[in-house]
Image 1 (cartoon, rainbow, N blue to C red):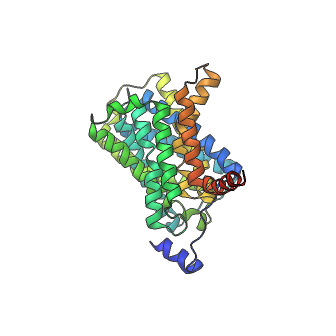
Image 2: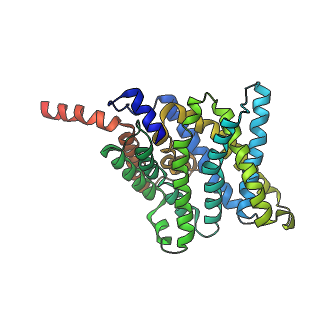
Image 3: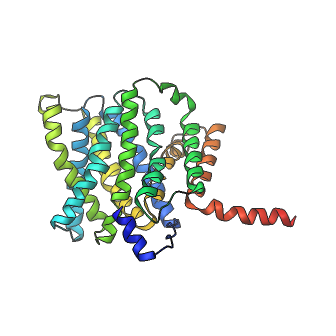
Length: 325
């Protein structure tokens, strides 16, 4: 609530206008959806032979090492003051340690399709959390309509049959929903790094470094990884992909979009993940697009436009043209 009070003090009774996505932001969001869409595949490969907490530790530790190398190579500044690192640990807990562990554990009990649908509730949680904790990302009818349209589009794309698993392994399903809620709080918490003057790459490096520190004792105590058989080469390939693509690179984009477009717009990425997966399959694997795929993408497109505010802007022009006829 402190952030809301500060914004109200600056703007007075006038509520700030939510950030609207630029073409560059939409491009970055689509790229992020491709990177994060691969994470469900990578986790699905690794979780068969590596326990969940060890997966999370390897994911964030390798990503942290890579990002610090990039910082060193580009001579980018890395803050080391206590205030910034306290924020890094908060972000690492909300955005990595908690949700990564919940999703990795959840995918040991439920299918990745159902996990993707449950993960797509993130924008709904984000809209509600942003309304409660910010002054410039308030709840509106357009945003609620957009979230519901987007969620319906995700279900249509992945296939309603994925929902047949609902009611089974309820604890695992709640784990993935808990991860979505953690992501919502993380997107609001992460807005502070722009005000603190921390660059997206330094924020990404600090976050995964902090989460590595948090996950190390958990993995050592619970999983005892030194007792496990050494993973095979394909598993290591999936771990590297998970760390470098779906974590290191993805979080540089994450904090860049968050700084320019806000938390609610950023979380639209969960709607775009299945769209990216289906389009990539069509282009590179020769998979055929079904009629329901187009329905799902249309619903997601309408949902994105409603949340971004563009649908509300277009409707008056459409009504005006209709009345002129």
